[in-house]
Length: 585
Image (cartoon, one colour):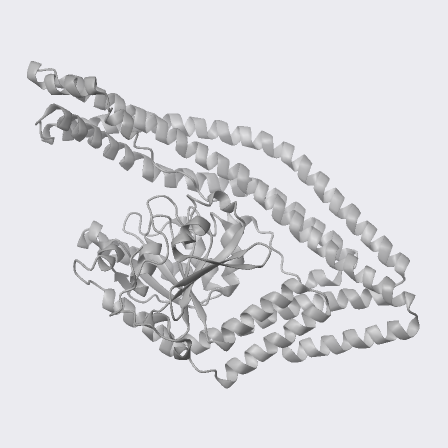
C-alpha cells in the first residue's frame, strides 16, 4: 500500500477539526436528548443512531458520497484526493460496503459489524472486510468501515464515502446502500465517456438529490478517451441531469485519478476539482452539517413519537383489546406470509415467461452480433501485423476479444434495462400486496403506521448488484501447450496462417455466445434475487410494527399489575417524554 505523501497530506491532530459552533452544540445536544428518550423507551437502535449523529454534528463532519457505476474508478479517485492508497481498487467490483474516509492524526481503520460493535483493524486488512472479492455478498456481516487519514482536504470536517458501484449500488444493491442515503450531505458523481451516464446512475442521482443539493460531476479516466469524446459526454450528462433534476448543473471536471496517483500526465481539471471541494467546505460545510442534523432529528423524533403513542394506547385500552389487536396483527402478518408464498408460485410462472423472452432476445442478438463481428474481424484482419507465429496468434485472438467485448458490453446495458422493466412489472404486485397489509394494520388502529416510513417501492428496481464480468478466456486464446507453440511457429512457414485466423473466428463466436449467455444469466438471477430481497423488506417492516406493539403490551401488563397509581405515573412519564421529543424536534 502506498504511504501518504507527507508533502500533500501533512499529519494533523484532531485539534484541526473546526471548532464547535452554537448551532452544532445545540444540534448535538438535541440529538443526545433524543437518545436519552430512546433509552427510556428501551429503543436501543434509535438511541444508538442518535448518539452517532450527535458525535458527527458536534465534530462538524459531513458526508460527501462518491457514487457512480461499476468501473468508473471511484476508489482510485478518492485515494488520489486524499493523497494515499487507503481504499482497495481493482478490476472486479471492489467495494462491498460503504467506507467512510475521515480525518485522523494517523492512518487507522475500523469496521462496524452487524451487532453494532466496532473492530479496529490494520489498514492493510481493510480489503478483507470491504471488498467483494474477499467478502463476497458481505458474508462477514460488515455494516460499514471507517478509515482515518491525515489529509488536509478532510481536516475541516469533510468525509468521503466510498460506495459500492452501480450494477452494484442503489438500484443494484439497495440493501447495502439505501440505508445510507439519509446520511448523505453532498455527492461526488463519477461518470465516464462510454456510456456518459446510464439509467441506473440517473435513478441514483435522483435519490441522492432528495437528500443533498450539492453535486460535483467528474469524468474520470480522461487519459483513456479523446477530447471530443469527453466534451460530448460532459454536454450530454449536463443536459440530461438538468432536464431530470429541473435545476442547472455546474462544471463537469475531467480528470485521471490513475495519473494523479502515479504523479504523471497533465493535470487537466484536477486543481479545479480540489478548489470545488474546498469551496464546498468553506461555503456549505456548516449548512450541510446543520441540514443533516435536522433531517436526523425529524426522522428519529417520528420514530420515538410512534413508540410513545403505542405505549400510551396500550395503557389506555383494555388488555383484552390489545391482545385481540395483536392477535389480529399476527393474523394479518400470517396472511401476508401466505400471500407472499402464493405470489411466489405466480412469480415462478412469470420467471419462466421472462426466461423464454430472454432466450429469444439472445438468439436475435447472437445472430446479428455474429454477422457484424465476422465482418468487423474480416475488415481489420489485414491490418494485423504478421510476424512470428505465436505472436500473430496473440494479436488475432486479442482482436477477437476486443470485437466481442464491443458487441457484448452495450448489450449488457440493454438487457439490464429490459430486466429492470420485467422485474418492476412483477415487483409491483408484491409492493401493492405489502402496502395493502400495511393499510389493514392501520385500519386495526396501529397509530405508529402514520409515522413509520414506508419502504415498499417497486420503482427502486433491482435490489441485487450485477455480478457480470466479461470473460476473455485467456487460456483458450493463448493455450500454454508447447506443441501448440511449436505448431504456431511452423504454420506461417508452410503458408497455413489461415489455420490461426480460422481458430480466431471460432474463438470470436465462442466469446459472443458464452458472454451473451452469461449476461442473460446475470439479469435473470438479479430478477429472482431482487424479488427475494423485496420479500425480506416486506417481512421486516411488518414484523417491526408487530414488535413495537407487543413490547408496548408487555409494558402495559407490568404497569397494570402494580395498580392505578403506577398506570397514572406511566401516563405522566409518557406525556413528559412526548413533550421532550416535541421540544427537541
